[in-house]
Image (tube, rainbow, N blue to C red):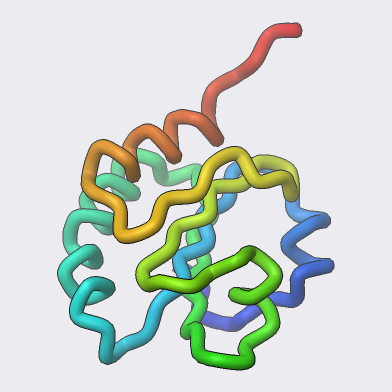
Length: 105
């Protein structure tokens, strides 16, 4: 897991599956989610995970429309695939599956 906040431009240029986790260290909902998220993420070792300490006026969170914590933004190749606000385990698994599925066109 990375903790350095990237810019929106850096996020938009990423390749592969990425999970952005927006929250705050003092947030009870975020603390409750942490063990479940870690457990599910362990089954997706190839998904890059960036934890973003969010707050009022922080640009990255606002650029993704974050208003409640925790908010998970699942991206593939810089594009939003799914967003989950205060997710349960099933929503986490669905998001990770969505960004790692190989689509045949």
